Amino acid sequence: MPKKTKEAFPRIKKIAYEGPQSRNPLAFKYYNEDEKIEGKTMKDHLRFSVVYWHTFRNPLADPFGVGTALRPWDDGTDSVKNAQNRARVAFEFMEKLGAPYYAFHDRDVAPEGSSLAASNRSLDAVAKVLKEEQDRTGIKLLWGTACLFAHPRYMHGAATSCNADVFAYAAAQVKKAMEVTKQLGGEGYTFWGGREGYSTLWNTQLKREMDHLGAFLHMAVEHKKKIGFKGQFYIEPKPKEPTKHQYDSDAAACLNFLRQYDLMDHFKLNLETNHATLAGHTMQHELEVASAAGALGSIDANTGDVMLGWDTDQFPTDIYLTTQCMLSILNHGGLAPGGVNFDAKVRRESFEPVDLFHAHIGGMDAFARGLRIAAAIRADGRLNAFVEDRYSSWDSGVGAKIEAGKSSFRDLEKYILGKSKIAANQSGRQEYLENLINEFI
Ligand code: XLS
Ligand code: NI
Ligand code: NI
Image (cartoon, rainbow, N blue to C red):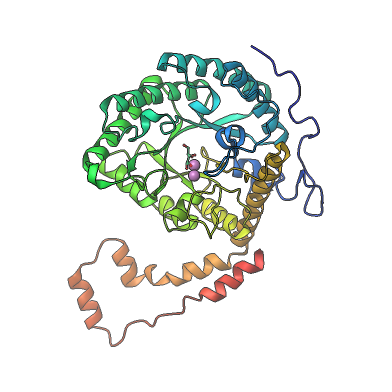
């Protein structure tokens, strides 16, 4: 196995926690991995994960210009050797950063060959290096996935392609990606729709495509059992881009799909912030919808730009956002075996290797702050007490009876007719609560 010849980030030492007073840009101000919050270390709460595709494969091109990224360790070829060297660089980066997890698509880590068999061989060759580096560093695979959208064969989708051979190819590719994920001890496997959707309904049999997606996921469940893979399956909602409409458009649509195709027991959701906003929702909304269904699995932590209508995949820096995320996550009881996966890329203008550190340090600190603030809000108790009190009419009397399923329209008519006036409403106190949250930010 070729060894990495020299350090890729020679001037960067292991990123340390220096506290909020530090002015060192290459230090954590809030993320102190061993510090305990609500009885658990920050590391175990946040389960940070670096994404291979953006951090190590994104050349930072846009529709108007070529890539700008300087990646001196990369020889610019599509060789397996280059891919293996890049894998070692990725682990040097993650080790210096102190991220406990990473995530990848099959085609990010290893080049696509001229046939499926050749692609599988190159994946195996790079997976060997990944395994070695995992063992060397203790860094683990949060989830694996297959790229079913970049190659031209997937132009009409993968599991929802009009071309049955493409469905078969995608199945074979996912089979291999799941097996490699299992070999690497992956804690999960994600299905993001890629091109599972349509660009126009004039050429689309919508029901047939959705039935095919259901069948595809059932085959994945079956194969998971067959190989004894114990990781969590995730579906990642996204409403559009690259297609005009993606079938997994938001948390509610995914849950509906999973219920319709009898897959609820096998999947949780991997929610991405920028996908939530593209769907016209907040991330908090998506987290609460998934949590209510017992299906909150993991998050792709990024953010969009309020002025732009596409998936800009920026690193999260907004403390309100991370506070909302961490409050929902703590209330849910945590993310494990999921994590906070930085599906985010540096801007095209941030082309130097050190920018990868700034970006991740910023995202980790933003989430660490969100965690600290959310825990403080929970410890203070006023927010929760207010909300509990707001619903107190359901804790006894008529409310408790309705919740217990012991009421009917007839009973409720009798109850209301027997009252001279109904209980008065109370203020929702939105502004008071917004001020309360600001006390902690
Ligand atoms: C794209 C998705 C993708 C998934 C993994 O928008 O976020 O990166 O997370 O396939
Ligand atoms: Ni994502
Ligand atoms: Ni995205």
